[in-house]
Length: 204
Picture 1: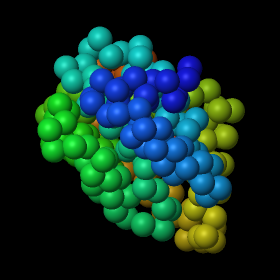
Picture 2: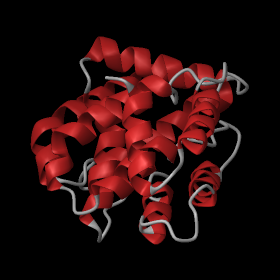
Picture 3: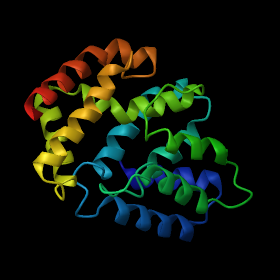
């Protein structure tokens, strides 16, 4: 999979010029390639887009969802609480006034990745599930994932990080479902819960 090609085709279809596409790609690549990003990087985007490609026939607004995937973690700092809002604002800022994309949907989709809660808009539920699919990986891959998250939060000592991480994970388990679509629930719900419970036990 070539991320740049997928991105360039998307922006070309939206109405960006070749020069604009090139500059926006460089900005995106730079943002997701920062040394502080051990998980929220281009590999994460690639995995989400693999899910998108597989399920895009189920989406009402595939262009908006793909655009949102590219920008959902554009702004990312482990110490900040407004990453999703800032990412959503940035995503809209590069769209022209006469853009064919539904800007409200893009904004709402990116913001929804903060809470990962059931949404009335089914397309948003699909993107949330693409984002959380990592939770249902085989244990060795899941272990790599939570080690990468720990590195992103390395400014926090264990006595702060461990309870905070455990609280966030328990929040997933307290919900009726982790995944928002029936498809992902049937495929991944049980595995994700086992992984999360196992990680929580390691944090205690």
